[in-house]
Amino acid sequence: MNFEWQVISNNFFFLMGGLVTTLELALIAIAGGLVLGTLVGMGRLSKLKSIYYPSTLFVNLMRTQPLILVIFWFYFLMPLILGRPIGGFTSAVIAFTVFEASYFAEIIRAGIQSISKGQIDAAYSTGFTYWQAMRYFIIPQALKNMMPSLITQAVVVFQDTSLAYVIGLREFLRSANVVDAREMRSVELYLFVGLVYFIVCFSMSRVCKKLELKKENA
Amino acid sequence: MLNYDFKWSILWSDPYGGWILEGVATTVKLGILCCIFAMLLGIIIGTFRITQFKPLRIFAEAYTEFFRDIPLLVQLFFWYFAVPSLLPEGMRTWVYQEIPDFEFWIVVVGLSLYSSSRVAEQIRAGINSISPDQFNAALSTGFSHYQAYRYVIIPLAVRLVLPPLTTEILTIFKNTALAMTVGVLETTFMSQQVEAYTFHGLEATTAACVIYMIITLIVVGVMGWIEKLLAVPGLIIRKGADS
Image (cartoon, rainbow over all chains, first blue to last red; front, side, top):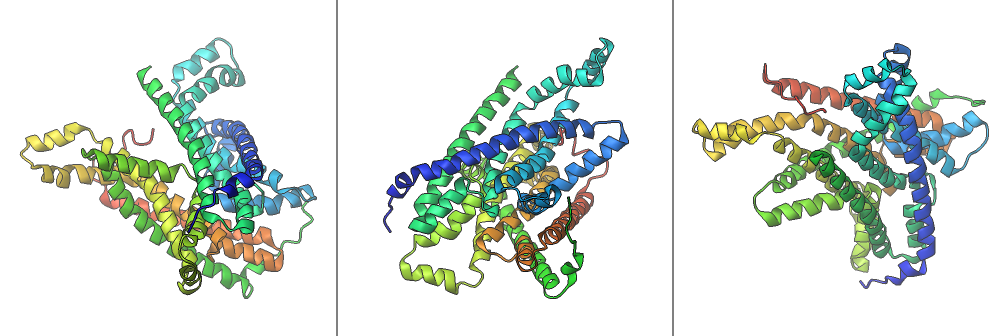
């Protein structure tokens, strides 16, 4: 069997188009998941039962589900709620945001718990409200403490976006798949896709390790 | 909003209910096989990562990085589409057509390799978290190296890694859903097939969600039971493990 690497260069722009979609999806999902996850993470520590139970239920429910199923579920549910069809991209964004929020929430919760109670008391005693204390004292520190875990999770989200394949969204993997169906060069294409994913994820995990070392030395 | 005619009865009507149950059987079979292989491989790679012998350590580290940094779906496609196309023409047709349940076994291979790298990380972390004092204490009471491992380190390590291994087992069961992309008839695939035949995708997908939830609860229950079975009274083993 001979390799024909031209298949990559011939379809380079098509493949890169897929990679851009993947990156867009990942960035929106990370941003959305982080915001929603922070709120849910705070909810998980709430003393109000009406907030604590729904957020706990949400996190535990999501974590029992395969992502692929959540993607399908929103794909079927969203048109019903909105009363009109929405595109694959929008429904994938919603599914990823909601799903990853449950994972971010647990990281944020651990981050908030890692901050000593004295800090919160200090914030309150200077007259801060709950939201102000969270906004200016707790959350920034929690995010900083949890940076390595958050980056790891961001890498996971980036990898997870490949699952948008199942609803026909033309992201990186799907575009390789499309080219493969036409050119029948599976080995080259999937090696290329794997390599690109590997480079991105590996360099991110190096960054993560550096941050962790810095934290230990600090 | 929501002017949708829910028809839950679809789930227990013939043949759709049967399809979903068949799917569950495949999911369970796939999950159990992958768990066994991932554990065996993971324990081997995990011990490689902490040996004194450098080549083995480097191999194990490369192995874990390699499988962890590529999405599982890409790996499955690689095993399913790319590897057979490396074979000569005649053999390729034979592989796709003659091997019974070819997709199923491809997923067993792909998912086991992927999961083993994650299990290996947990094993390594578990053994590393046992302080060397334990080992020295065992040696100073006259244990040989072998005995120290057999009676002190391994029993501690097993109990330490059980909670994170539970998480990994759950991940394996959830990841079996990806098998649908290469055409294994498991729960998610079947729920989408019901959708294709009846257009009641929401009901079918919700049913699949409930099934995965039940599988999760069963795994958590079984692992909890094993943990309790192995628990040493008065020994707080989980100290610091969950922070």
